Length: 421
Image 1 (cartoon, rainbow, N blue to C red):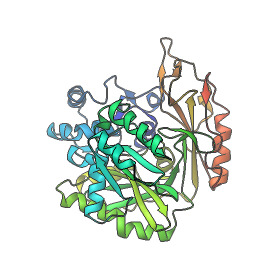
Image 2 (image 1 turned 30 degrees about the horizontal axis):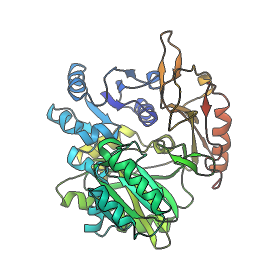
Image 3 (image 1 turned 120 degrees about the vertical axis):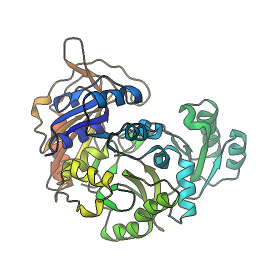
Image 4 (image 1 turned 90 degrees about the vertical axis):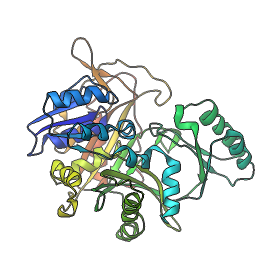
């Protein structure tokens, strides 16, 4: 098959690598891709939101199957566009991608269908939000309703912080139109776990668990980022937790979306908080997590195209997901200053030491310069990933692998998985 992946980050690199190993893949394209993806796919200089150009390209190259990696095009309705053009596409349609595109929608859905989550209130007016916060319990969580690159969440310890957060989100529009609506919810405590799943709109199959590190600095300090590293599996995701979630969260979410006339086909990312009262949903995403995909997909035994086609064809019940009995750790090498401000364009060296079987270097923010050298082109630059017999072994291997990579202005956390390995 001729296959097109849409996106250009570390998640899409992990997807492209998996797809490149599929028995179904004859020719693989990625739009727009990046310097690392170029080693396994032909990169096409078309932006992920350029729907008409992407459809035209897909028709011209006789694309048999499209895979949408990013949240923005999914929320914008790219799957609808591709399907209208007769192109078989993996990912939720626009009316289902709202599960991530609107936090207010997802919270209302959970409330309606008794899916455990934090208590919340939704506000359209900043003054009403501030008035509510005057009598709220702290700490408290503010969430921009729409997509905000994983950064539209503020944890506030007192009224002053919260009132300032309302101003930043709703008035200053730090996250753009994502802040037109604000969700304020109770602060939950416990272990945070990420669980990815495949679904065909009826059946849901759970992938191996993962655990992300969102804060910029060691010790979970500093601002929220898109993710500074992750590991899989999570030691806190026990059989008991799995049983509870399968009964009270996973299937109920799929069924709820179907009942709402929004059948969900693709990947649902469940962000869970393991509270004293049991697991609760922190958030939904409508695609693979980034960097969670970088530790989950390398451990998956299945042919990824088999699984994705089964989702689109409505026969996921025929698939049994299988994962290696090991662990993986991903350490994000970022540009110093991320997520606030940082410089780009620094040459990167050291890629030759990765075998794409047990050690991986997933490119998140890279590009080619005029001379054809790979240079930094973003805040999160690389996801250096290694598999090992257990978390301790995988963590050691991942950090050893980072020593092979060199670029000016680099920064990484040194404690990814430290408390769990």
